Length: 443
Image 1 (cartoon, rainbow, N blue to C red):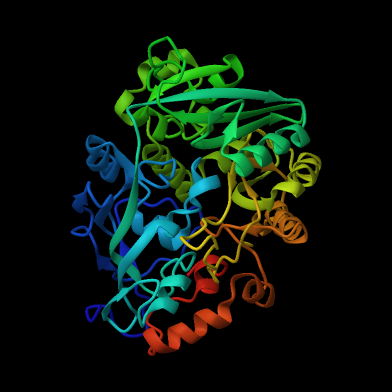
Image 2: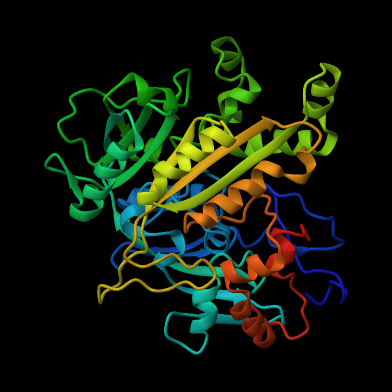
């Protein structure tokens, strides 16, 4: 950190990023290329020690040979362990395992003061440990994490349930959360897609083959995973393919590059059908305004990028989707139930920088695309409306993409008073950028 002049923000120099908010350019950054490895897997204790820039792709490659996986594996291969903890990750096991930071046992953090501290749930840095999730580097950067692992077999049986409205879907989610089962079968993972107001699919995943008699399917070639939810009632995947089922097509966003056309798909090298490749292409478009130029040339209204993940209480999901259809009109929408993970004593640990309510079921709604809005697009009218609606429904919004909150609202939603107290202790010279500056002011 001493190599970065005082007055310049301390940031990381990374090869990949899963952020979708533009940032002001900075001079100098911390070279973290050497912090991308798996340190050790302990198959007996079921733990993994990893460096902060280790991707989940590399970690899964190390754990699956032991019949183990992280409690939560975010859906994109190049999400890093440090990024998923400081920026929040989520996936289909989150209804029983919470979010990735809830399986962290301890972590080493580089603070704004240039020190490495080891934070655990009950040592002298416990407040830092609890406040680090959703801090996006405003409290420091994880250099090492020890996380818990869980056993998993080599195959996953899927059941795709169809519903005509969100009330029916919510009732099944509620039952699975309460009992851990559906129709007599244990449910290990659960997520879904709302294709249309009257076409919602919920996928229940079961570790193991179950009663499925056929061979595992593959969605890394010509077949597209998200379409299978509407085409079949059950399926079988290898565990490896299940964990990365969304990555090959970046959910359904690869369609923007023509990859849903079989002719294009056959010509697009399989090694390039990855979320990080698509992300780089989006970055090029943002830099040079390619799509905006084409729209102007064709006389089409300017588009607003609506790329967000929000959490709304399960009982308010129908209200949100109805409002979303009327005001935004974007489908499909990814649906992923989640709850704070209960600890050994039965209670869930609070996480002040993203204060979900213990014992309450939420649904993450993810929607990623553009909407034609005209000349107001740069001011983000739809994104602002989403923020207001989610808050009105007692929900929360992730901060990996653009945010427009005023300082007072942001402080209340993300407990920045607590962050300020911790920054005074661990970053007395304010070398790190504040969370509001990162998320809203794009610094």
